[in-house]
Length: 283
Image (tube, rainbow, N blue to C red; front, side, top):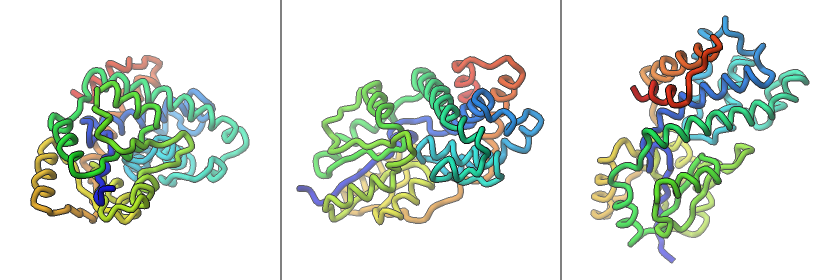
């Protein structure tokens, strides 16, 4: 058995387009709440107050499983608390809202997945250096994927982008309950007995997951990051960027500005097509 392992996040790390997903999350959350029994919680008149809360909740869980992100957003608009909850009961909602929450999750999942499918078709591609880098790293290290994407969607996306799955020793995504987050996956990889485990991700939350699992972290910023990673490892240097960073007000402003147009169109009864939303985000 090899003594070293490298795990990769998927969205924003192997695949470009991580910022799109934040807007998709915000739009899908709002639509699901309105259509499935939480419309009174997100009245149109309160959008200017609620949207910054929704953005804050999402940014607290960038890179986390999608249903954990939804619970943080719902908790933000319902209780003013932009943090995820373990179970719907912890939302402290009344019986009618609790009964509707499963339908909110289902509709959110449908809209979010549909937006992702369109963006993947129109804009998302693997970073140019990814395939070559994975093939090179697989010669000397065991490789894994540790993603917050639902397992079945992750498997489909890997097939869609024609990744060579033989380079990976394991491909792990999340589940519908919000469990199997990247921290848990990394702990399970480390428990296999590796001397060194490195996690490559693009978000500050990914760095937090690596710290919690007690593994090393490398931040992927762009395609050039892959050349930098190979150069470090060839010199025998294992990166360990262990300090989380603030995503900043600029990114929060981006999410707010890109989400408000499609949400207002939905409120007005003239929803944008998913293709139009994706093109707007990427304009």
